[in-house]
Length: 179
Image 1: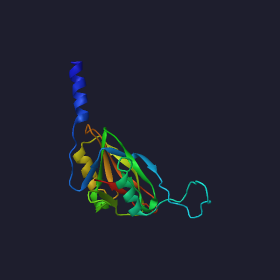
Image 2: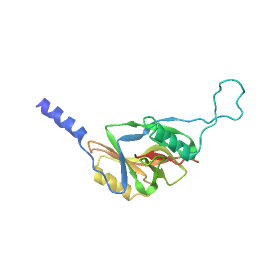
Image 3: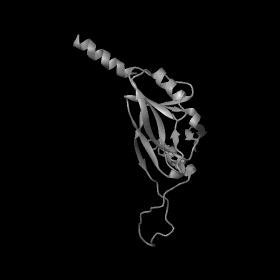
Image 4: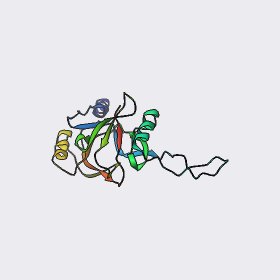
């Protein structure tokens, strides 16, 4: 009997949540991100010695090329906001982002694609503002009907979901690597 209970709990966590038209699905929580600021050469560096630069690369095209070159360490960048980074894989939740808040664009290589946020006042960090112990189809419906909802995060056992908004940040336009 105990084995059966453990098996059913284990099976719940392997349940596949559906994909939805109009949403991009990620096995990540956008609260758990690691980031790095790539630096450009400094024209005022001291001559004749190694130096460290504090000049951030703020060109979205260059940041896209960096992410396409270092695929293992770069899953997103913030455009003019200069940061690049990775999302922490999270097997307990799926994040669904509304496709209507951005556009799918080509990267710097023929096989790369990005989801570019439509606003330059969003950051990669996702803030939840309300949640319920409801199944995924009802959480999606709540997000669909809430104009402030950018995304929702759903537990993979289909027990709880939260509506979310990407954090505001002037000058940032996140690019999420899709391929």
